[in-house]
Length: 406
Image (cartoon, one colour):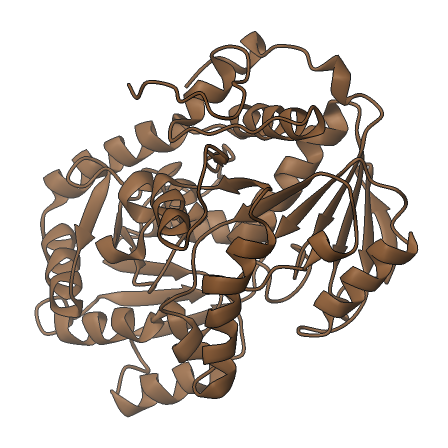
């Protein structure tokens, strides 16, 4: 990645007001990697002289309004009513008069196109084709998927998009997001120095993320149960919380894995990174990931990851065979975990690759790329690239001119 010190100045962004419309923020108990990305991009814009407001759902863990590190947070509505509340707040001017709006489409957009004439950038982590029937079975899921699949691409047909991976960019193309207007801006990774002495003396697999059905944490539980026949000291640490917590506990009891599984719950950053460092392998059995922020976080501790290839963004955040392992089935997940837990040499080689790969993705580079996308939108232009490096390699292109792929 490019040295962040080489980034160009963006004086035209100074004083501009950017409003983010997001379902959640990082203080929300259900917040995760998408919200981390959002707030990192917001912080990058504040550093470049922008005024930044984040509108999101209200929750008990934070006040209705506050300013944190120069970012104004406005929290209204619930998990579902936040969309209507966001439209109302934007239309009435409760969020000020933004120069550009970032509509974070987490399955559903905020329909901001209907209530503002400001340029809109649509931020998409991944398409929810597989998740709608899992989280909302029946009519609700079908309506949600119709909105994401058919309505949103038409509503935002003239808007700039940001995807966090080339896989997501490809999925957007399949939904009909046409024209040269989808820029890829990868996640970064925070360096973290732990005081923990090192890896666990006994085999330890970690799962880190929200406890919701589509994260498929049960797959990791079942893998550990199967592998304990040969690795009786093997344990699984599950870090995170969510509304699927009770069902996961029931599953652990049903497969008699109570002595093998530790539910850590929602932990602070230091404890999370301690678990990353002590773990031998990170398991990410998620059905879908836009990028997989936990992969890079674990990589900073030389902990390789085993994940599903079909999750999408994992094909870019994991170097298959060099920083981790991509698999296609639940059986392959179990086998890959068993191979790494039993082969210290290969595990450590992949750990070195994971460290190198995670160090290659910086938040500074992502923030600069995101800022360039917003600047282009303010100037009435679109950016289109599959390679985040392209965004900082020269002047932005005008719509209709395609850059040659490297």
